Amino acid sequence: MSKTKEKTLMLAVMGVLTAIVIVLQALAIGIRFGTFSITLVLIPIVVGAALYGWKAGAWLGFVFGVVVLMTDAGAFLAVSVPGTVITCILKGVLAGVAAAAVYRLLENKNRWAAILAAAIVCPVVNTGVFLLGCLVFFYDTISEWAAGAGFSNVGAYLIIGFVGLNFVVEALINLCLSTVIVRILSIVKKPALEA
Image (cartoon, rainbow, N blue to C red; front, side):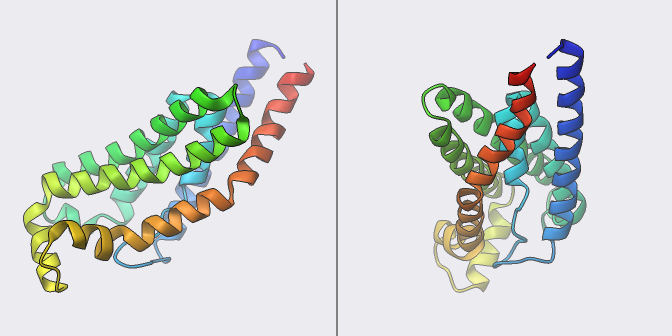
């Protein structure tokens, strides 16, 4: 496949993945397991990261972070605008970059293992950075929320009462859809192999 065709295919696929990230995150606002809406966009982030590397993962994560800021970050924006912006953008970008790094590290050894690892790392990094952002920028507010929910320990509240169920659902969705990711990669990469 010529360089021009490869770039055109990449732009088309990234455009579709970007649109999917926006639509899925906008739709996910109504799906809640606990405090926050569920994150359904990690699959297209993993697909983009696996197909085109860390820049694609970072871009898709950035788009995810921006959509979260515009749709689902009101409680945090009221406390700290800079903290919310940094947390939302950073968690998405780092999740995409981490998924790409893990996929590239394992891709030549075992593609299934690479996809499974990237599909697990993406929600772990997304949730982990979110939790760190909560501790750094919103500790006092989170402490009040924890006390109001009957938790004496902020860490326990964050893990159990705040993000626990969401994280489990997100990780399970990613793992269940890992076979779909492998199929998408096979379809998109097939024209390059045939050229």
